[in-house]
Image (cartoon, rainbow, N blue to C red; front, side, top):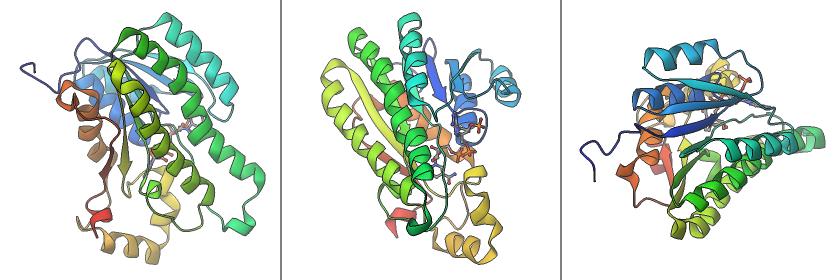
Length: 252
Ligand SMILES: NC(=O)c1ccc[n+]([C@@H]2O[C@H](COP(=O)([O-])OP(=O)(O)OC[C@H]3O[C@@H](n4cnc5c(N)ncnc54)[C@H](OP(=O)(O)O)[C@@H]3O)[C@@H](O)[C@H]2O)c1
């Protein structure tokens, strides 16, 4: 174990969906921990994230890919894996559509599953394969409380988040012997655009807050420590784990 087992100095991290929210916070946190960043986003308007990375002493390259199109994402990821050494992959890009199951269109279902699951696979397969070839790497996927629970009127989201937890375990089994660790983070209720509708409904907001043992919603910054830990040597023997960062929600 090195003097600073949480340091990411000398490593390159690919973070998907880093324009805002949890992904932006993780990218900035990784820069503070010493990593160089590659940001995969659907457009180049990443000024705030790039500024935060710079303020934390880091550097970043931006790669464009729309996660609604897994085939295009895969082509981009294959090229990236061929041309760059990626030590850490954070599968963060994600979306949600809220509607009762009977009113959820197949197009909405497909969109959520493409962004959250199929594009996660499309990035992880080539990037992870290159890690396996080099004999080192860390993959961290942003799962959800809805990797464990059913949720309320978000059927495609829940299905996709259960699936990424399963994929995490499947790949941990397969790639662990090659020195590649595959874990996930299950954030609790975090104040981002993903949860705007919940926080705009006073009774829903209060019901959620009152059920959280920590007594408050999480902030994107609350997820950063777990993301640094899982990427670092400090987590060298942690593989196949889905780490809840939820203020105690799942313990209740
Ligand atoms: N907030 C929570 O309470 C919570 C809880 C559990 C899990 N999560 C998960 O955490 C991750 C980040 O979500 P967040 O809460 O930070 O939400 P957010 O603020 O809505 O951020 C979502 C990110 O994903 C990107 N994204 C969405 N659709 C995309 C697409 N088609 N192509 C490329 N990128 C796309 C967004 O890019 P643009 O900015 O370009 O749209 C954005 O950077 C997601 O996987 C989410 O499911 C969130």
